[in-house]
Length: 373
Image (cartoon, rainbow, N blue to C red):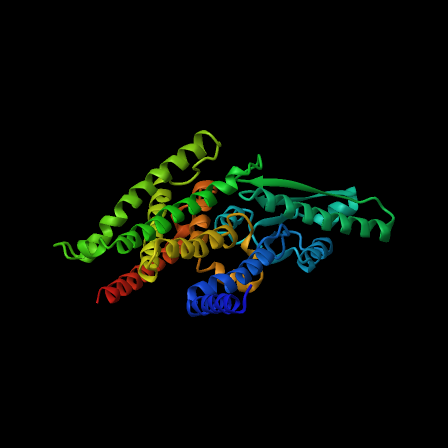
């Protein structure tokens, strides 16, 4: 290559570097996105179950039950959140999401063990997530077995402590019970948010948005007109997924169908608001797709509890998961659809989604009006 050609080539390379460096969004995609992905995938994707919330029902409160409880609490797998005073509280604790596993001791536990040499401990698990339930019961059984071995070494008596496992809400351990709520949240989020943002940006990109804005209709009505078709399509998707879940996958709607649909419509509204917000921040369809992919796909899959339990993640990722709307929707769907809980059990999720909808919509409309001005 001649000297003149080489200089020209290097000049073009420098120009391209300058062009890329001046584009902040491109630089963030090229340099920041890989860092975010490796951190999220490295810490969020784990099959380990740690610090899971468990509750204890111990009517005996003797030396044996205290020692087993201390061993469970000392384990990295469990975190005892409360002690129950009545067996009737068990169902309420699960429906309110305060525990994933409840350890139930019998009355006169230590006395029965010393006199008969045999005793049972009931392990009641929330099996809406079959993998987590299986792991928790396995870890608890191993800790109980270790305590039994300690007694054998100390007393040379073959005491037998048998864990009795009971799986609530999903005794057949079907995976569909876990992934149906997650898939429902992901599909509604993508259809509403991603498609809405692209549809509005397409109008800007082709220059037809200005034509719409000079029409007699107000901007808010124009945006609603763009959003309503996606709302209807999302409602159709909601109905289709529920029908397939019930009649093909065998996942029951154990709770109120009315509240399930109402919460789903609220989540659809949140997703539409997010799509509107992205449309005010981007100028092209490609940019809208990239922002939607980074903002929705990865967080929904990794941080919503759709696949990986949130409580197993580092504290910073657990905090970030609070701002993912799909997390609260998936929790609400599991409670209403799988556990058969009442609306009071999902009041917290409804309140959070409602607040998100109001805030996101207000910011979106403000940004949209600023751009019009």
